[in-house]
Image 1 (cartoon, rainbow, N blue to C red):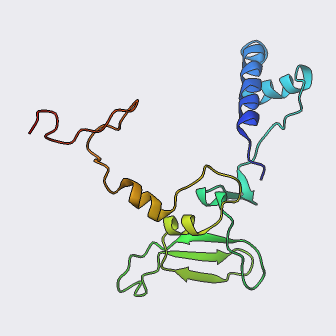
Image 2: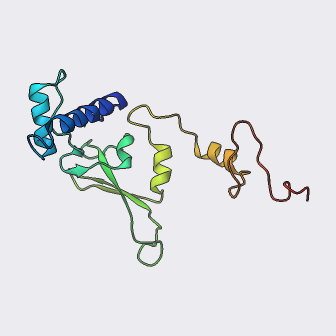
Length: 166
């Protein structure tokens, strides 16, 4: 699936807004029809009428689409990750948290890692904002006083007792 860039997203939203302003309510009340008329009459750039949100057939997008998925060892296709809903206990004695499942050959690989753990292990499928590793995040936030306001404009955080000299 082609994920829209920021510029493409803004361009498309502006085109839909222009179509709404010109054709609704004068000619139609259907935004799809208004956008189609705008594209055929006034647009200088060709834009598809509909943008699909499916990445693989009818499967909807998930946050894991931002990462390169594991390949199936049997058929070399991308596998889907699913959370294991059974909590650790008698029904799940191994404590599995996730399952990688191939949609092509039904191969399953269970794991004790959580979805969050997998996001730090997998490589992003496209450039993202540089992410901190789990250890870097823990180190950065271990002394953060969560109850107070975040510093702004170079100010320092005050802890309880500092505001009255106690």
